[in-house]
Length: 253
Ligand code: NDP
Ligand code: 8X3
Image 1: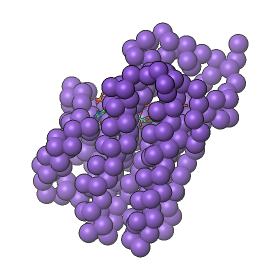
Image 2: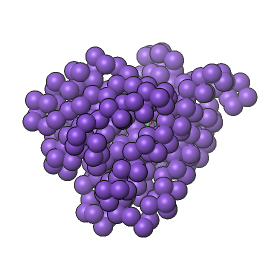
Image 3: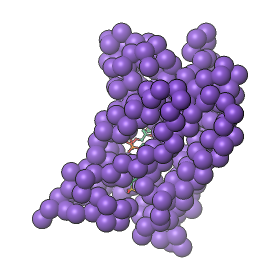
Image 4: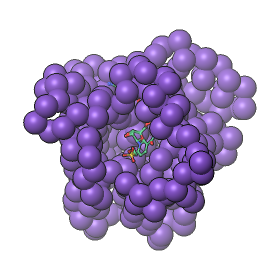
């Protein structure tokens, strides 16, 4: 992966930040996206010190025009993206499907599905033309089965699975690879956002169980990206040891 160009959406926190650190440690050059410009600059300073090149590309992934302009602004070898990590995503609330806020759900649907699709649509043609590339989508265990209070989020992650599988079919006659990584419980800012900023409720969610970290998922992402060219890690489901399904886990009292 040394010298490869890796673009990560949502690199300012959690899984995306873990991926940025892991790929930089392994010598990849990074294009880091997110909306938090201060955090992007901080990461750039930290990771550049490791001897890799880092480009920040701040834009809201829901803004298709901003995405287009950002990608069009890439110069020289930065245009040659080897690995696209479609990671930016969220959920807001744990409401029932017939009670939730449609405006909040628009944000979730636009980020988790439409932005991932737009990034794929804008980046993959270049990969096909160059005859190399890897698209790694961060799905979720939530895409395997719906759970209480997760209807819309689960639907978006089921969509990520379908988009990953469909893209793999569409690219079957090319050297490109497509991976869908499906984490279970990972302790990141995700749960704070899910509980609309209620940090105490987010902390309570992880009580009695040792969750995964963004760095744990980054190891899996890196494993898929660095597998030999003829090996396509199509899908990975990864959970804490004390989690068995999306709804069944064991918590120590
Ligand atoms: P975090 O909240 O820690 O990170 C989310 C990242 O997404 C941030 O960097 C944020 O950056 C970025 N992001 C959100 N909205 C936008 C936007 N509109 N435009 C650009 N960037 C955006 O959560 P995680 O790291 O946990 O989540 C990453 C992915 O992992 C998501 O797709 C999530 O669904 C998935 N996942 C998480 C699990 C978990 O338990 N945590 C389990 C399974 C999957 P910024 O605020 O700077 O824009
Ligand atoms: C996030 C994991 O189990 O909260 O995708 O849905 S879960």
